[in-house]
Image (tube, helix red, strand yellow):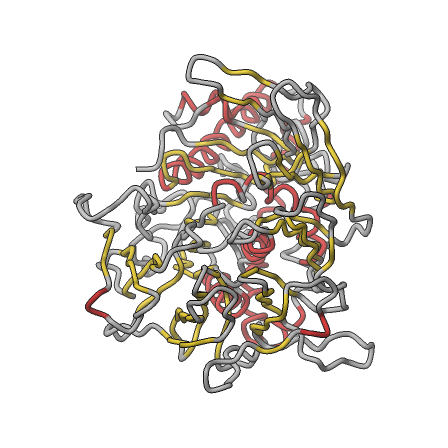
Amino acid sequence: GTFELHIRKMQSVQEKEEFDDEGQSGNVGAAIVWGADDTTIYYVRLDNKRRPYQVRKRSQSMGSTRQDVMLYEELDESYRVSVAKSADGKYLFIRVSSDATSEVHYLDLTAPEPELECIADRREKVLYEVEHRDGEWLITTNYSGRTGKDGSNIPTTNMRLMRCRAIPESAGHWLDMRDGLYKVMFDGSEQRTLYQVQPFWRHAVVAGKEDGLARVWVIRFGEEECNLDIIDFTRLDFTEPTYDVRLSTNRDYAATEILLKFELRNANSPSQIVLIDMDDPDDIGSRQVLKNSRSEDKEGTNALTPALGAIPQFQCPVKPSLPAENDKPGNFDEYIEDDAAKLSNATTFFSEFRSKGYDGFRESFQDAKANVYDYVVNYFVPPLRNGGTIYESACGMAANLLMTLEILAENYVADVEVYGNDYVNASVDLANQLLSQTLPAGMHLGKICQADSTNLSHVPSDSFDVVFTGYIDPIIDPLNLAAADDDIHSGWELSKKRCRSTNETDVVLARKEQAEQERWFARWVTEMVRIAKHGGVIVIEEVARPLCELPRDWGGVSQDWWADAVSTYNWDINVSSIRFDSAPRNPDYDGIRYNVAMKKTGVAK
């Protein structure tokens, strides 16, 4: 799941020249940032465990030799690095973070010979992110100023918004951002949630939550250069009683208008791209609807408006219409009982789940997250870099979905709509509760429904940028040869016995069982491909190999099967896009299971 870096300079449509060396740019992460001009890039390198640990600079012009310089290296294996550029393009930010602690380094891209500086050294259990505006750091942080018995920070309930001069080692200078009446805007308490801050030349826009609704606030600064006085702090209000609103893609730092994505909480209503004047945000009459996501009329759009897709509109079924083929005695009992028990003691579960054994594995949530981190960065971040929609089939209690979303958020991915399904009702209830309480900033919970993953007829086609499943639960005893009252373990043992047998009848039956298993996998994946957008990514994690090939596992399909399945089942998949990787989440299956990723043909409609 790593990349090589190759750069090609386009002289014209007909003439091009490649100007990087071969074979020396492997182990590159997904994040690449341009410098102040088109001759410099900054990129992340991965170590042998696929952990992002280095940031390198490459400067090169036509005719010169490549010059790569290592700017930063993180040796602590619990930390990962990422790169981004400030909204005004003045600074490169290198964020170094673990699950509980972070620090940010910066490089002045406008200086002739800039040196890497640290904004604030890491402090235990202090998370912070930084933006820059007009000589100031705008800081989003959980720093409370209070410490526990171990001396670490006691995090605030929500994130605070703070500010200080854009200087290195600035921790002692952080101050709460206050409005014109000197009231603290975001103090980290339960009353007001802070998700995202985007600065502009004369404004800053903040997305968050208040009074149970998604909210957007506009901060207006003085018009003179270097004027840091706050003139207005306005919460955008709408006439509709229930709605969802968030920032859309806004790349023009000098803009005085802001693009928002607005949606009524009504399955029959379209999402809209709305243009709002930041100098007069209260004027509802001046707001312009540039795009209705379900309208075919392109009038009113412009080239600067991103072609954002519709938020999927559907209702959850009451329950699966028919029992799933893999719904056999004992197959779901553990999940039903375990998730029901967690629901009955939800407060304790939500406070402890990160450090406990995760979803039937011996690995904790945190350990599993560390194992999959780089895989998610490589395969999930690129298609969701500018926001979008994600769907997990058979999400269980949503632990795998949550860790995926956290990794996306830690890599500056926001504005993502989250959906999924599971067959077990108790798991669906637990998933909805877990995500509603722990969803990272910038992520938005759509629907988690009870449904059979091989029959998602309630979900519209071509709806999601990423569709994935953490595991395709195989059919045990696919020919139903075990006694009707036998549990799945008995049927599994009988199937394994046929795999070992040389009896002609057993050999034939074992082949038929594998054919049924492949048909079951195909039904599951067919639905995933159908609901993915054209150009979207489909990921199947933890794929088991055929039972007779590896009888210690529950059974699955070979890697060779996938290319044949594309034509056999008429999947709208580019065969050349299929990629296989080891399945890193659970060390118990290292080298046994594998992950597969592929891309739906075409472009998003």
